[in-house]
Length: 223
Image (cartoon, rainbow, N blue to C red; front, side, top):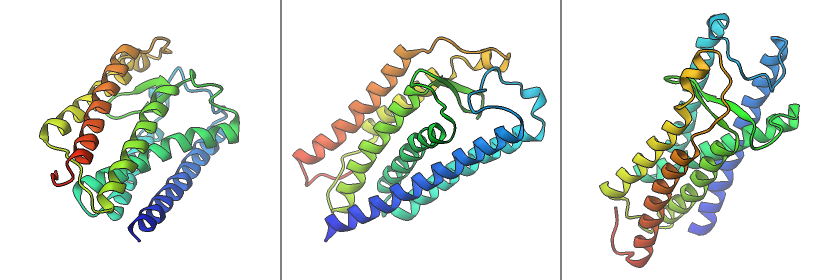
């Protein structure tokens, strides 16, 4: 019964995330059309001319994170399971967002297309393949951890592994922030700090794999 419970919950979470991605991508297309812009007109960014729209966009991003955290909180039964489901929501939403944008507008034209990813606390920028890679990892490990915990298993996520996972995430963020100054100055980024990005992804993957592997080898241990 637990297997069917996990599958049903995962299906509900994925469907919500895809619907959320549809809604956000539709809003982006509609707003850009209202402003006379195409979906691909991302850079250069004119922050001085956005006025209240800039603050509205920041609020939208914050609201999106609250929604993602809220679904994770409702779906999970423990702090770690809630975090895992939130990771799944984020990953499906992010990939779905680009997929729906492509359906609606033909953008992004490829995985190497640059995008403005986030605005808090400064602009994040990177080629589309980078956030998709992060999201794929969040979906895979999030589902693995959430399914094991919901089925009554254990995941050995101690302080060392969680710290390594957090460090990896921070390093990935640094990679996205390397062009923040250029974007704020009205420039268009061309070079991505992929070695930093790969390092951060590697740290996160090692931490997640190690936690799942040890738990599988010693089910009696929990974290």
